[in-house]
Amino acid sequence: MTTHVSNPAYHHGNLRQALLDAAEKLLESVGIGGLTLRGLARETGVSHAAPYRHFADKTDLLAALAARGFARLAAALTASAAAHPLDSCQEFLTSCRVYITLGREHPAMYRLMFGQPQPGVGGQPELAAAGQAAYDALAAAMQRGIANGFFRNMPVQALAMAVWAMVHGLTELAITGHLLACGEAEGEETRISESACALLLSGIAPFRPGA
Amino acid sequence: MTTHVSNPAYHHGNLRQALLDAAEKLLESVGIGGLTLRGLARETGVSHAAPYRHFADKTDLLAALAARGFARLAAALTASAAAHPLDSCQEFLTSCRVYITLGREHPAMYRLMFGQPQPGVGGQPELAAAGQAAYDALAAAMQRGIANGFFRNMPVQALAMAVWAMVHGLTELAITGHLLACGEAEGEETRISESACALLLSGIAPFRPGA
DNA sequence: CAAAAAATGTTGACAATGTCCACATAGAGT
DNA sequence: ACTCTATGTGGACATTGTCAACATTTTTTG
Image 1 (tube, protein in one colour):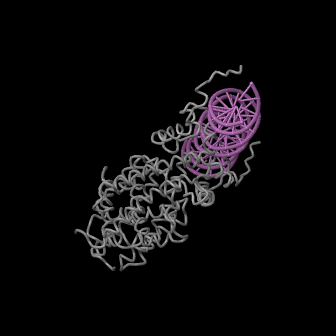
Image 2 (cartoon, rainbow over the protein chains, first blue to last red; image 1 turned 135 degrees about the horizontal axis):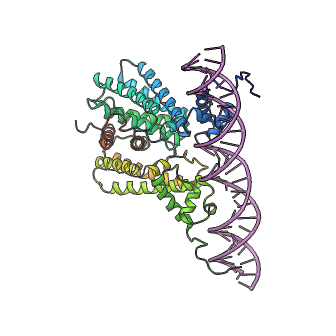
Image 3 (tube, rainbow over the protein chains, first blue to last red; image 1 turned 135 degrees about the vertical axis):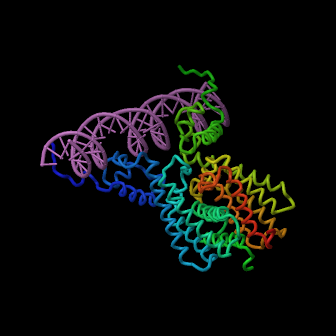
């Protein structure tokens, strides 16, 4: 009975990553509400309790998933910033577009990222680090803009937070449908977002640019 | 056995409101995750299935609760707007403060309000109406500002959405702890929020105000 | 290299929850 | 008084998160 036949299916090999992959896929298809630990196990072909060997509980898995999302966000932002090494204003508008687009293309993931109260100290360090990295990318861009005279000379943090709040707010409102729930036609969200970012940029600049 | 004794406890009288009241209380104490239909029934002293006589399902109750939240928000905004009938800039800053404060004081309720994707057409009409009312209050204020020359002459909608996105973003970041997760001391959130709103105002004004 | 220890996966249970169904009871209208 | 409808009850059922006991594979170690 002690079948010592090496069954390659018994130990999955990399269940943790497989679970996160499946979770990411399910997140897009069934949303955060339909994301269940047992369903994940089913999808991955393991027993319903197997995930507990890699995650303390459901929120732990969700936190790891959110960390992935923040990592992607940070990568996208740094990449987009590199595209405009000379003009901080163009870089700003492009980064806003990139941020909002990413959120709107992966709404469930985006909402998951901001779903749980930030793990001040007790939470998942992985998540906190990933979020910090995303913020750092933003703050660095704003710092460059200040140094180059494109933005007002003020505490970077205040500037970065204003920008973050604006794009975060636009993304959330777009995702939840509030951006156009007020009589606008479909597809107007992008135009409204662009306009809002431009408005903020106008307040950020040390002088009044155009119009 | 057919006890026709009028048992006043059998029919609650106003269970729907009682359930919403209990839900609002529980929401603040245990958060959205701890809010359960059965718990609500327990709290209200009725059987676990009683709520289904007043709400189609859990999301239906949640939607009604969110509608309450939007109504409160709209009321608070119109009240605060009335406090500065002459200066749209002061009105703007005050309204921002009111909005953000309300959200931070009732974080669970605020997140609930934006928790579900907006009920475009199929969702709860009550919720949609309440949300619309809140937006209308904001749009009206911006319209006045435009008419009085305090704000740029531009489509009200674009202006209102920019403002809404900013305050919504600030509120969300404050609630989730991201506003100060970046090295700032406790209590700095308010200062950062004020600064961000002022920055946006600076972009909204037709001329460059101070500094 | 064999034995022990650690990792990883499985099965079986339990309580809690959302939701439905059949039934009981109250109030309203005839 | 009788019926209809609204409202509340009790009992199911499937699903889920989670734990404990056991099995199997891998790794470490004497």
